[in-house]
Image (cartoon, rainbow, N blue to C red; front, top):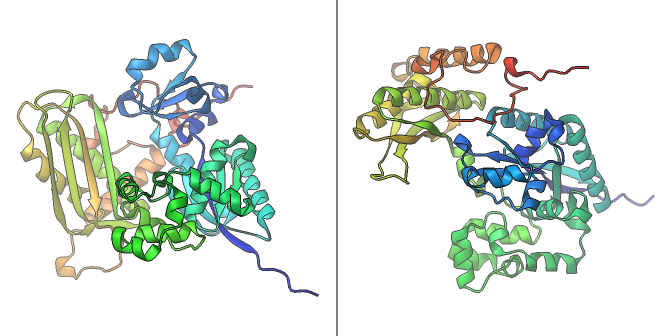
Length: 431
């Protein structure tokens, strides 16, 4: 008997189509086929649009105040950003993908790389269609699947799967002929290659490298000397040699956490800003505990509207006494950084906190004499547990635990129900 050929091991990029709009349709099936847009903080600009809205000419980033009358005449339905819902659906998607492959690498809220195997390219395509069908059946959201020998080529294939109806949502690089691959690379701008930013694309253009095909033909060693190791790896990936980890393209995803919001009404006093920072410190440290990390440094900022004079922005950074997920320690640090620097009479419309120098929790315990008070960590864990059991916002840290929501909180006048995370907003079904 002849020896069986080795299976093909490939990367598959699973990408949710118009993610926020797709999540809105899960509990509102009447929105299927209707042009839908999702708006940014305070119902400002369009940040997600369904294919129907795109066909009508709705542009990404369009100010809702400017287009809402036009959109209403064309039947466009707008929704406020429902981050709790989107995050919940994203976690369910990642759990579902773990049933397909043991190797799942979440790249963003709506994208994940997984490792897949099949005996031939047609088997890879069939697996991609099964993934699409499973996600649609179990979660109710549409996804596109791009499959390739490297993450860069899987990302390129995903773009084709998303924008070519003939592919029915699945594109496999191995199914393309050599001439077809060359045409795809030549038609792809260098700036459209995963990991090539606008600044790098401008530098490449100055050297006459405008397309992915031209980039594919460059010497990786020469590019490494001129642009660094990441671009050299990208060239190798375009040639089919896997050598990129996701963190190589976006170290910030694993190296820091950010929580930043705009206010519906300006914050003008130190007491109000302390309440803002209380909420943000609680949210960020809760994220730290969920991912099993601790932070070693903090950066915070607050800014007035850039459209009003005089513009004022304050920002500062500091090392934390030790790596921690203690909300009290983070709050003390950021309040000491921002509140003394606030300008009298300034109307702040945005603020944020960034935690950096992240490390796995418990990797190296400090000596007892240097260890921080453990009560802060216990308080944070208790807050998480109560909010999980009773509902988001049931208790809070200091001013973040006020029963009445502050008037500066983000305006979301078209918010849909949070049917997967809030007991009070569970979907009601009538028969």
